[in-house]
Image (tube, rainbow, N blue to C red; front, side, top):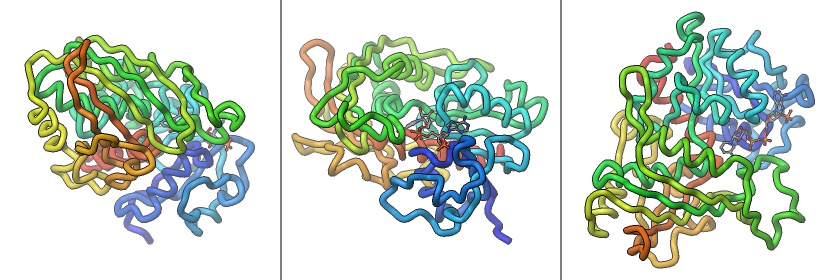
Length: 350
Ligand SMILES: NC(=O)c1ccc[n+]([C@@H]2O[C@H](COP(=O)([O-])OP(=O)(O)OC[C@H]3O[C@@H](n4cnc5c(N)ncnc54)[C@H](OP(=O)(O)O)[C@@H]3O)[C@@H](O)[C@H]2O)c1
């Protein structure tokens, strides 16, 4: 018998679900014992139901597991969820109601007042919101979420600036990878040799989630950060990795050396607790003039480190720079895994 904690994956056959399977293969604390997806996949062996798109082989043990229907009956108590928002809004509450800890990727419940939206290095205190959830009071179940895949890179880069200098205004323009749209995602004829200047609801998510993540706890509420933020989101023909051109106005004057030190020295609870998926360095500043680039930098820190580069003065705000983070690792499965590790380290999964 394994001494690891049994976990399940909802939406296991999709791009984020596959990333969960890959990242959990040798996880020291968690073991996948249950996989669920739509009725298209139910009853089939995972190896057949999932069109595997990871660069490592599908783990043999998981390939043979049968995909279950997405129902809480028979599911383990810890669920990683990677469902479309419309389906998640119906299914995640059902699992929480049945007593499961739902660690979700979806946007469905992220902005709900009693649902923690967490990046463990940035706002681990927000985890306490889950004590306000009715599910928690009734069945012990709860929902914790991680942010949108482009909000996470932006917020990791902003958090040290907010802490040391204060932020007044943020403007960000994204260049987002095709894997961010799931599988099969964007049609090749739409994206090859092209840029699509629209991703449904992405700009709204980036803006509201950024303010919730950088907000502060006041009793049982999160008070959103008060700065102004404007984003523009584009889909580009990159496989993995969301790149963002960011301009900021700070409250206090800062030198470039102070800003790069704030990024490079930034650490949080995952590093203090040495959580298994915590990167040694959550943010690293690259000095080369033409970096970060998705092709060379997206896998830094096993995909969990956000790369920042090209810090220079901005003619309109104070400073501008480029951010890159892995959308299906730091922006999805890795983010949820780190949330689950934080929950376990704090005793919420006992
Ligand atoms: N891709 C990214 O970079 C990224 C990053 C952050 C967050 N997210 C979020 O993560 C979620 C999943 O994204 P994805 O990119 O992995 O999408 P995806 O590749 O389209 O996968 C969707 C998954 O949901 C399952 N599903 C569909 N309808 C269902 C139903 N009625 N009942 C149960 N399961 C159902 C699918 O199963 P079948 O195979 O059986 O159809 C599949 O496993 C979304 O909310 C997305 O916004 C994605």
